[in-house]
Length: 90
Image (tube, rainbow, N blue to C red; front, top):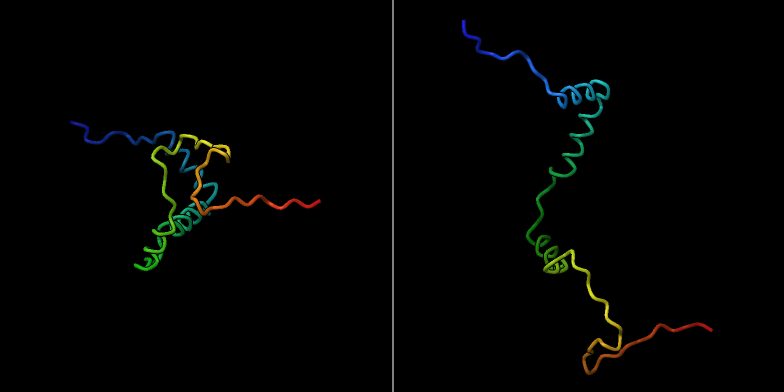
């Protein structure tokens, strides 16, 4: 006779998750709440999408490169721009 099914096998990961769920029954409910919080959101209006797009800061080409901080005297200013130093109290 040919055996069609393998004997029941559970990996260590599956055994761990089953044991964890048995020990903490509230875990699945909290997981479902977290999933709802992230994914079950109301659709945003086109106006809201436009506003969010306009408010977004441009991302640099390579985000892991450090931005160079130049001393103030090397920064070119527009002709009508003025630098204002913070007032110091005496």
